Structure formats: structure tokens, C-alpha cells
Image (cartoon, rainbow, N blue to C red; front, side):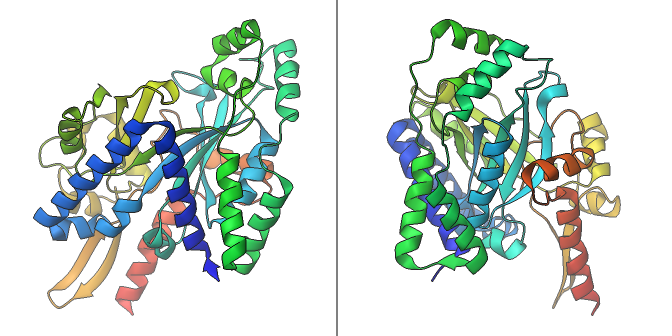
Length: 375
């Protein structure tokens, strides 16, 4: 039996290999990231372990895809469930400062043990074609007809995903078939779409034009994670990877929180961009609000974050006493607008399954560790 976590690991590797064949610069980025991580772990082994360890970060990827509407999102939920990945959070970009007609959720493992085994996550963004702020009636119906005509996730793939979910894994031959079919679904081809129509979609949003011209699901990015994002930028420049978006650097000595990202220019990539990231401490709602309000007021130590109830920590006893260790942020960059808990019931109804509140997941992990420490 190939367990669910191993299915997830195989799928992530397969997607990465396919992405690298399409975009050779991605292979270079991953190689440099591996070097940065290995060197960091050699210099600071204890700190590397606090951030998840070298084994985990070497295989860690966080991707993004675009889907054509509720039906495709529901089918994606079935597929990702077969890999032990469940919907977490709601990201509504329709009311963002730079609005787009998409609502997103993250499919990822939710159990800490499963995250340790393989933390692969995918941000799935669903196009909202019925939103009149973006699409008029004619454009909506034409685009919906195009999307309805494509079959992104074939019946056999969804059947195997449901079987993997029910059984907690698949036999070896079936697992191989499942991963191969899933990878094929993420290898789209362009259609012979009318250029003037695509231009109209592009004026609404690039994501609409992207979906209107393709027969399958395109991986928008597949970001490797590094311990030291600034060092990755320095080394990548020596390999011809040009930074096009600067990283959001914390003040010297400040704890890393949430997720930091950097983009590199690379020919052949979607939008000409590769993405890499580093991850820090998961913040509570109060911590998130304070951080969004300005870094000058934000605490400069982990101890201040914990005592202020601004971040999540696990707790354990050692021979030297009580130890609080930060919980790693596992989700995608927070939206500038609050699109979280209030949207979860609507998204759950759309998906036909529960959508986890990320704050609840982090709090439960923290509370469970406290209960074990107290017992």
C-alpha cells in the first residue's frame, strides 16, 4: 500500500519535474535553493530544525493554479483529498486593492504529522464569472460555455482520488496510475481562441484570458522554500536569475513571521516569473492585525510575541525546563482585506465539504501541546 502522504510526495515530485522540463530556469532555482538550505543547516543546525528541518524543506513546494468555476473547484477538492490535502482558508480578491474575479482556497495537509511527512500545498483560484463588477452578460456566457466544454479532471482520476481518500492510500500499480493521471491534468494545451475575445478577457483580468485559452489546468508557480531568502537572491544572481520583486525584509534581529516571497524573471514561465519563499511564525488574528498596521509597533522577540498572544507556539518540557517553539506558517500570503471566517460557510457550500479556518488549526496545535505539557 502506498500511503496518502507518499502519494502526495510523488505528485509534488512529478509536477516539479514537469515544470522543470517546461522552464529550465526552475531547475536552476531549485538547485540553488538546495545549496542555500544545506549550507544554512550546516551552519545553524538547531535553527534549521526549529524551522522544520532540512529533510522537510528540501521537498517543500507551494504551488498555484487557476480553475474555471465551482464545478472545477469541487473536482479539485476530490482530487487533492486523494493526496491528503484539504481546503484551508478563503482568499477573496474581488475586494482587494487590486481586484480580480477570483476566490481561492489552499489545499494542504492539516495534521502536523502529515505536514512533517510532506507539506505540499496548492492555492486553487476559482474564476467568478457571474460577478457583474467584472463580466457583462455576453462575456460571462461565452466564457462559461468554453469552460463547460473542457474536461479538466477525468472520471477515472476522480474515482482513484476518492478510493485513495477512503482507503488511506492505493496499491502500487494503482498509485502509479493515479499520480500519472493527476500530472496529465496539470499539463494543459492552448486552444485556437479568437484573439479579440482573449483581448476582451485580458482587459477584465489576466486570469480570465489564461483560462479562456487553455484546455487544462496550468501550474502558475511552484515555489521552493528556503531558510534564507536573501542568500537565495544573492546566489541566484550568479546563475542569471534576475530578481524582479524585492523581498519584504524584517528589521535586523526581528523574528520572521508569515511568508516572504521573491520573484525572478525567467523566460518561458507563466508571466515570465519564478517564485521562491521563506516561512516564519504563524500569527494570531491580533498579531496579524498589528503586523498589518506597521512593523514599527511589532514586537522584536519571540518571547514578546508569545506573551502578547500575537503568535502560535507549541510547548514541551525538556531537561532544561519548559520550551516554547514557534508554529510554522503553512498557508499563503494574507490578503490585504479580511476574507477569512465570514466566507468559509459559502466556500464550504460551494465545495460540498468543510473548509478549515487556518487560525483554528494553529490554535488547536498550540492547545494540544499545552495539554500534553500539563499532563
